[in-house]
Structures are given as structure tokens and as C-alpha cells.
Image (cartoon, rainbow, N blue to C red; front, side):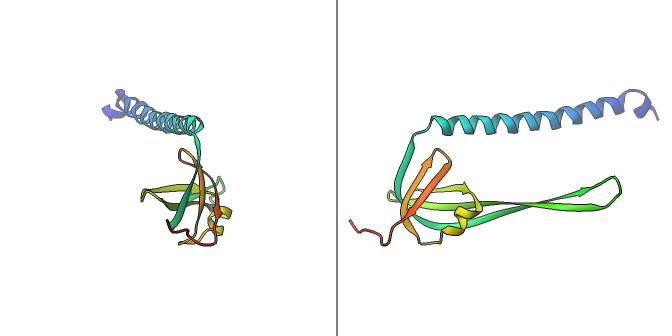
Length: 128
């Protein structure tokens, strides 16, 4: 009983609250930093090949006041491109853009930092 009434519960509550708050702030700062870095990066267009595609599905379960639960899912789409130098980069994009690309597609990739801007498919890969 001493733990709950002697101040231990309040201390634990505030420690957990501040840890959650710190994680939230850290995540927000990282997102804003990446957004700012992308905005200051040059817009580039390079020859690239689509080498792989993947999705990440996250599901959240919600329970309302009347104890009727529902869930929502979010799908994030990623495509890995290989540029002429052999370097690879994975970029996040919309589901529509993701659906328009197939592994092995060759074309002009436009991006700014980690931000996908577009991909213009070319008919055949040009040998040098």
C-alpha cells in the first residue's frame, strides 16, 4: 500500500508519461529534419532500374466506448532502384505510382533527397 499512497505511483506515472512524450517529440523532430533536408537537396533525374518492390502493412485496433472494436490498416509502398553506378536506393511512394512500376523497368528516376518525384519508363536499356 505504501507504494501507491506514498508517491511511488505518481512518480511512475509521470516517468512513463514523459518517456512517451519524449519519443513523440523525437519522432517529430526527425521527420521535420528529413523534410527540411529533402527541401534543400537538389532535384535529380538519373537512369535507373527497378530492382524490387515491397509493402509494409500496419494494423491498428480501436475499441470504442460501447466496446465495439474496429481496425484500420495502412499500407506504405517502397520501391528499390539501382542507378548506373550500381548504388541502390529505396524510395517511398503512393500506391498508384507503386502499381505502375514492375521489377526490371528501366527509365529516368526523379528524386529529391529521399523524396520520390517520378519515374519515366524507357522502352529498352541503352548499352554504353
